[in-house]
Length: 257
Image (cartoon, rainbow, N blue to C red; front, side, top):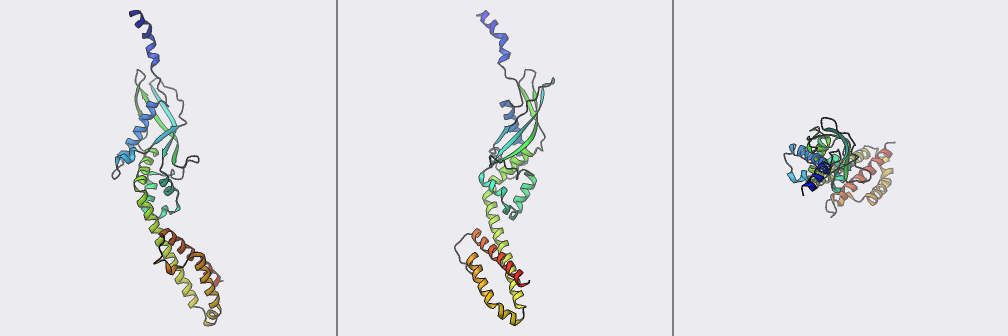
């Protein structure tokens, strides 16, 4: 029995796994640290919303352990994004929510447009740097990186959108509708003012053309007069107003040639 123990003792250290940049224990520690940094910024979100933002790593560097038992590592980090949030971040209508724009500016600078080509529900960050420190026995001591790293900021930003996506979407729809309605009212007032300022003879000659134009506009866009009672969504009403405004602008251009 003693002989058996002597035989296996020298080989025991070889069973310990060497710490590398890609070691699961290292990447788990980096992941935990990223979420911890994101939680520090939290004042309004549920903690679970932040912790639920999934982070994965790829293209991890093969750095060599230095004599002081430390590694400087690089990797690409990908943050999972809900498809509904992806739609919001890539939508031109994001401009209709000031608070959403501010969250993008504060927490998702340059990343909101970097949706990965092959996986549209992730935000990708290349060149993520982290330092790894090992104990004398080769086990992990700690990981460290910039507390203001953009990945931890993005975790908070994504968590915020995950919680507020429905509210932001409704705000965008309402504000887009209001703008479209105001734009149409302005264009309609402009063409009426323009037509009224024309000499009576020219108004008479244009009357038939204007009637036909109104019919054509209503056929293509839908009648504005029915929008107050029409049982259709605000998004559809917005489309009608925008179409009417566009055709009105074209007719104003024709009348002023």
